[in-house]
Length: 67
Image (cartoon, rainbow, N blue to C red; front, top):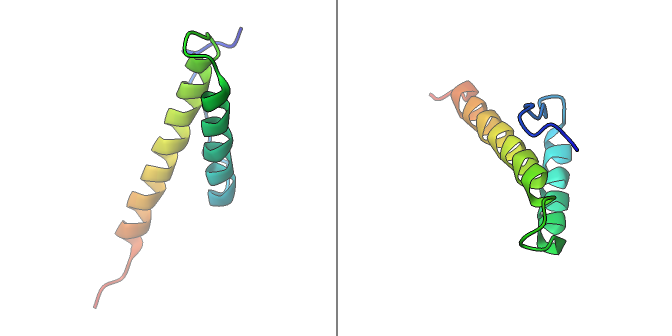
C-alpha cells in the first residue's frame, strides 16, 4: 500500500501533464466506489496537482509586466 503521508511531488510535470493528470485522476475517482480505500491516494494526488497548478498560476501573475 502506498505511503499516503509522503508528499506527492508533481513539480517536474509540464502544465499539459498536470492537466492530463487532473483529468485522469477525476476519471479514476468517478469510477471508484465511495467506500473504496483507493480514493485516499487519488484524492491526495489530486490535491498535489491542484496545489501545483495554483502555485504556477500565482507565479504567472506575479511575473506579468504591467505598464
